Image 1 (cartoon, helix red, strand yellow):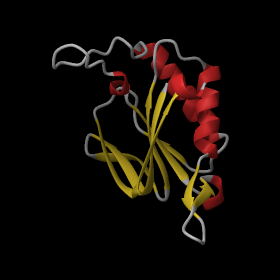
Image 2 (cartoon, rainbow, N blue to C red):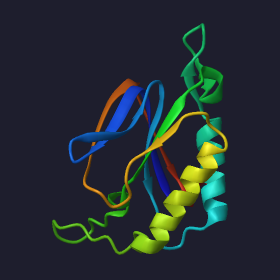
Image 3 (cartoon, one colour):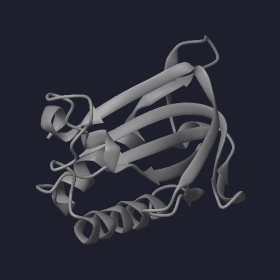
Length: 149
């Protein structure tokens, strides 16, 4: 499982030119699911993400968590995080989870996050989405379950 977490001032996601998810200060998170991922892995990834202290305190140090700044989440599925670019110029996606399994895992992640964070917005699994954001910093963290689980 991979999470690309961007600390944002604001972010939104559109489908068919209509905003379907929008947040103020918080994280815009791209979520990639591999075929071998489980709910246990998702739980560890969510715990790590929510606990990250990457917001500035009164001294300008990155010392505050999402909860401490009343941050919001925008969660967007993105199977292309599992692109395999080893051969040729056309990426392969065989490492990404099958659509049904990945959709279920994405829904699980969303539900778990909603139990922990006041404002959680989402994209639309499998849709052609347009994501806009103002990356604050810029500050981007990549969590990979192969490295933290």
